Amino acid sequence: MPKTISEKILADHAGKSEVFPDDLVEVNVDFAFGNDITAPLAIEAFKRVGATKVFDPRRIGLIPDHFVPNKDIASAAQAAMLRDFAKEHQLPHYFEVGRMGIEHALLPEQGLVLPGDVVVGADSHTCTYGALGAFATGVGSTDLAAAMITGRVWFKVPHSMKIVFKGRRRPWVGGKDLILYTIGRIGVDGARYRAMEFTGEVIESLPVSDRLSMCNMAIEAGAKVGIVPPDAITEAYVKDRAKRPYKFYSSDPGARYEAVYEWDVTDLEPVVALPHSPENVKQVTEIPETPIDQVVIGSCTNGRLEDLRSAARVLKGRKVARNVRCIVIPATQKIYMEAMEEGLIATFIDAEAAVSTPTCGPCLGGHMGILAPGESAVATTNRNFVGRMGHVQSKVYLSNPAVAAASAVLGRIAHPDEVVGK
Image (tube, rainbow, N blue to C red; front, top):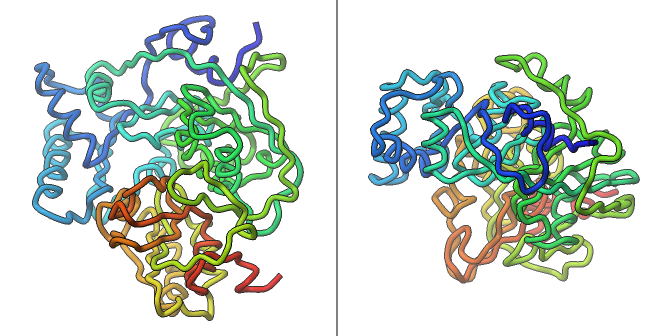
């Protein structure tokens, strides 16, 4: 019987010839990880059941990235738990401040999550790695503890849905716009516990950075996973990074999907998700004049080198509006170095933006950019719920990096063409 890519990966990792939607399966895990918020809970559970060793030190990652550099004593204590556990169990993939990055940018960059993998992380945006053709999903901290001990987890096999993007992308339109458009069409629960498979001619020409942005936000539609069938673009990205063998899976012709959406995005302009939901989406050109106080360019969604290049193209030779704070956060140290070598960091500083070491900080309202009552921000992050970036009376607008940069220059939500011209 024809199978989807997600069903094939789960079947192989469960040691079965085939699996079907709604089956309960126990599967082998290729990589499991946690961060400084979620891993301490997993470590406590690990110790509570009396476990003395992890299933494979090479298959576990600990990445302090949310409240680091530590913002207070409590966050320092959480980070210390990761450090101590990594030392005790001799985990090679513990990434200290100065060597770390935002987990969902760092792990693909390091070649630790790969095509065909089953990956679990105690963070909802673990679905990012579906961009490489992996079955990757977020789990609770106790599930992470079980995975660290046994190397296995259980899933209900999700139903699959296919989203086919046709046409050609307009200038300034990237993966962030495609996924926001998708969420705007189907809603924040439109893919609940589904495998969202992204295909079509637009996806086939999409760079890995944009694919990562799309799969990162599959969870914002309620999906279990977002996944892109691997191809030559995937191979070019992983071949020199991979730390171990990998396998390309693809969906069979005639595979069954619960739903199929086909959209021509030729006329799609950059979009923005208005407060307070990722489904509240409008094209930039449809939004009335909206003043802002802050811009954040970075996060696991849009902190990669390609994102920084896009923002720098808009900011080069210009200044951030005097009434706006612009914060730029490269997602990893490697990206930071590459951005410096290309002159992007100088462009940001010349524009009077603040540039930070890698951190999730402002995305979750942690630090490095908290909003006061009544303030509004344009951010390249992934969530804009009430109070997400600070006070409950603040507002967050989600956009791609070019829109964020243009908004920083004009002090209001803006199309990049308003700054650089057509």
